[in-house]
Structure formats: structure tokens, C-alpha cells
Length: 252
Image (tube, rainbow, N blue to C red):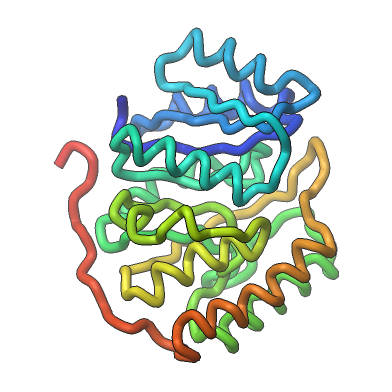
């Protein structure tokens, strides 16, 4: 078992999964992969089982139904904590997140308990989005920043690396949100407790195969969740305390 785990929810990702697994196993840093499949009708789960039989680094968690991205990640995070992983990633399986960025995340984790992949740090790095989608995302980031006080450029992004102690501090059983609001909630729970969080720049490429998971319900949930988080933090727009980062990396 490697100390780093990539948690990758899948639903109809049969075309992408073999290539993604190959890219992850070829990285200069050693990682394990957990495919969290929501009973994909295209056979993604069965293919994941076949890949797992061929590679010890690949694991599969089957879920009976599609109940949201947040629920899939929570299941994956609990699986990771039960097995002692030190670094746990959120990552899409459609190549919108570049696996070659993983070493940079781990380097940044020397000084942080949560590393956020940012599409907007020092400029906009998004490929193949219409202007309307870009404006929605940028407006959401500003909305989150104004209401919660979190200073991050990309609070709705889904490419992240958590240290073990950070996941343990969140209280996963109390997280109920999905979609964009799930990403915001997970970050806010750590930020308001003072855990060190840093951003690293990434290039985000809109998926070529399949369909985006954006919906009106996801947007509405995020709009409401931001105010709920503000109330949970005692109407503060700052952390309640500050914590020192852990500085060790795998093998040190």
C-alpha cells in the first residue's frame, strides 16, 4: 500500500478509466487508486474490477445507486481512513483534472493540510468552457468569498489533496451536501478550524466524452449552503484559530 490514495468517483467512465489508470500508475510518485463506482450502466464497475485484478494499486468500491458526488467522496474518504492513507485526493476521472499535477500537490502538502487545485490562481486556466459557464464559476467564487471570508480563488474546484488529520477533523458523518456545495463545505470546515490550506495552479480541461454534472439543483444547493456555513462559523468571516502544518511527506 502506498501512502497516497486517489479517490475517483465514476459513473459511465468506461472509455476514460483504462487510460486514467495507466497515467496514474506511470507517475514519478507512487499512488493507489480507489474507483468509487455508482453502478454505472456502461460497465465501468466491471472494468474497474478487471483492472484491480491486474494491478495491486487499484481498488474498487461499488455503490448500489447514484446518489451524488459528495456521497461518493464520503464513502471513499471513509475507506481511505480505515486503511491508514496519509494523503487522500479528490479527482475526476474524465481528464478534466490532469494526473501530472499530483506531484505538485504533494510538494505543496509539505506546508498544508489541504491543497486546492485552482483554475484561477494568477490567471484563468480553463479549456473548452463557454463564457457563460466561466462567468457562473467566477461569480460563485466571488459569492463564496464575500459571504464566508474564505480567501481562496477557486472554492468550488474538485481537485484536492487532504492530509489524514484534516479528513479526521472534518466530521465526515455530518457532511450532507453534494456538487459545488460539497466542495465549499469541505474546505470551509477546515478553514474555520484554522488548518493550513494552500492553492496550486492547475489547467482544467472540460471533459470530451460524457456530460457535465452541472444542474440548477447543484447551483441552488450551493447558494444556500454558503449562508449555512457562515452561520455555523458564528457569523465570522475568519478562522476561529490557527494550526501549524505538518511538514512530512511519504518516505521522509
